[in-house]
Amino acid sequence: MTRAIYPGSFDPFHHGHRDIARRAAALFDELIVTVFDAPAKRLLFSTDERIQLAREALQDVQNISIVSYSGLTVKWAERHGVRVIVRGLRNVDDLSFESRIDMANRYMAPQIETCYLLCSTQFAYLSSTILKEVASLDGDISGWVTPHTAQALRRRFA
Ligand code: ADP
Image 1 (cartoon, rainbow, N blue to C red):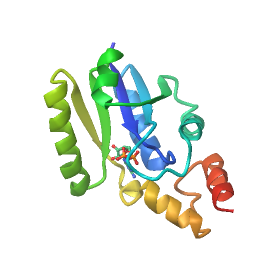
Image 2 (cartoon, protein in one colour):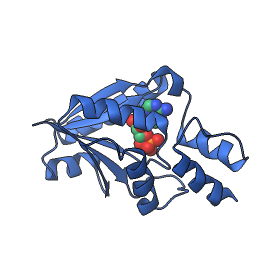
Image 3 (tube, rainbow, N blue to C red):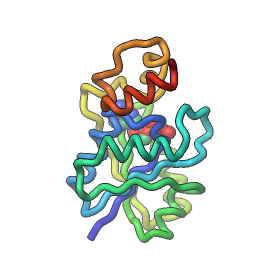
């Protein structure tokens, strides 16, 4: 049985994330979406809120669970017997950034592999940053997030 984690800040979880999570869940026996509690960036949503929004977006997928974590991703994976990390790639900038993290991770935990899924073309430009910026200016975000998350964003920027 192969378990994989899909780590990120997910502030908030959008359709680009959902696309990667669903495709990874089809490849592995179990996928755990791990929501990093304290990324080095300003957050709009609390850890609990980010978990709830991801949970709602993925409620139809049986073999996905969502948890929060702190500390190094590879240490969490080691403690929980997980050997695969899933990451999404939008473009070469992502690849360049991710490859450095991957090498550092491999230095710390050589037995853990990172598996990359290329994003679907319709989400290639989508980031949580763009999503929040458009939402803050009352733009149409209905194609990027679930109605539940759209409502949470609207409330946050009301
Ligand atoms: P980070 O983990 O860098 O803080 P996110 O939480 O936004 O960033 O992203 C988590 C993962 O989802 C990363 O692997 C990221 O590349 C991927 N991702 C982000 N946006 C998209 C998208 N539009 N399509 C596919 N994957 C994405």
